[in-house]
Image 1: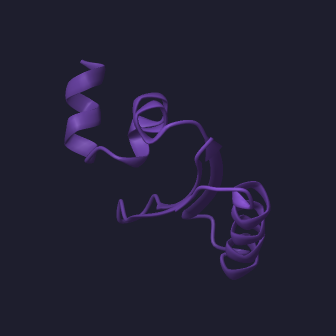
Image 2: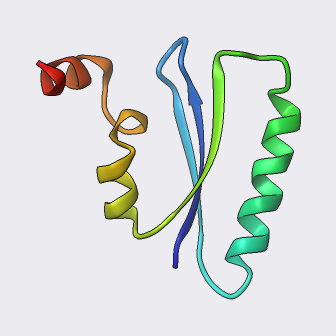
Image 3: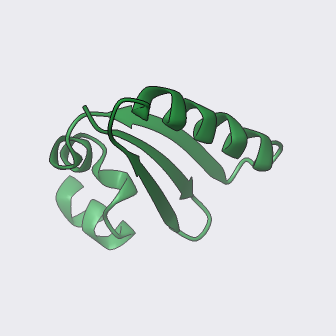
Length: 77
């Protein structure tokens, strides 16, 4: 199963995604998440999340990390 670590900046909408596959995906993704949590400690504008599933599943269930704000407003209305 694919693991994804997402850095989402609420202030500017910036998204960085790191994808992990293979035998060490769990450990690698968790290590990346913890490192980023330390980097962004005290910054309320940045979310760091660890997700698992296929990339398609992750994009569907966590669309706000992948869509522009105007797309989200349009989908909600």
